[in-house]
Image (cartoon, rainbow, N blue to C red; front, side, top):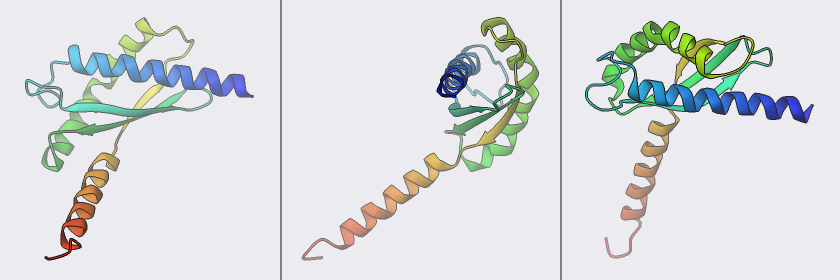
Length: 125
């Protein structure tokens, strides 16, 4: 059993690396890169049968551009999957499902709230 987990983790990590590089260097869709890489892959989860992969991403573009970025990623999914097939040596390349990862934004917001509380708790204020 641990060997399967290990292989699944290696495949997920390889997909993560390859997708990050392809999105950064090869996609020309303006929804995904307006001169800078706006999309960052945060995690990849592959099903045990390798049929599907959840690709978690975040973006520096902000909430306003999220629907646009989602459309761009869905549009690029076929190209990305085809390229993964050329780069990764597994029998079946999974279907790619892009899911927005709000944890970075939540973490930033929590950090701001903690900073505000710390400032208000200072003696003499």
